[in-house]
Image: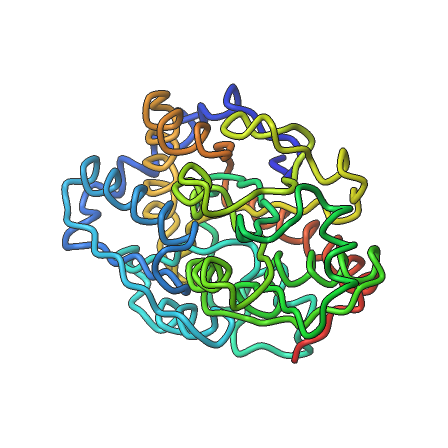
Length: 326
């Protein structure tokens, strides 16, 4: 079974043999361009990874791939577009676990339901999150950040929506550190990072692909990262546990979904195609590992099991953090 914690590059090679009969019966797919709906604003990790995967899907499947950003409604707008699309595999959702893990843990009701509206296609990657501040903020670690916040008033932290990992982590930080901060939700990680750079909010918890350029240019300072190990792309940055905030350790996974009712053989052809992309070590090294991401693979059934487990874990974290939907 795939999990958020047991990920390795060695596990990327999916057993394609098991999918061959389904692939053979799906020769007619794809018969037209494929749409990938991303339920976040441009510039965030979901957008970056989704577009890179879309390009490779186009090259392998021989059809154009069009990526559309449909942000808003805590991803519900994008989910609705895919849920109402023809169930033929030509419209896909690329999102992170906030859609099917964070939101269900926070909202008593949602306009979508994965079991009813969508089917898992393939997991793609697990991404470390980083607590990032503007480089002009006079702090170098989490303890200094706590001390700084206690001397200020009306400071805010940014997330990419209520129910997202940064939202839960932010509320956990407030509880652990005993500080008061305002949660500022955005329609994606990109806009949140923009406001950190502009000094409008104190910090956010973006994923590595979103901030690589700003980190390299010295505009952002990373204080800690999620995960069991330091990120190779920033070995000087401690993990949350090393920084004394182990309860804030939360990363994000990213995956493809299709409308409910999509033929099994089409789902498995897409699953096998994603596995082919992730078996390309040059692609994985350049587009994932070097930027703090770890490739994932697995069957749709394994994804369903992972989502169920993650929802249970998230419910407990929400209770502990006291996070609420504004």
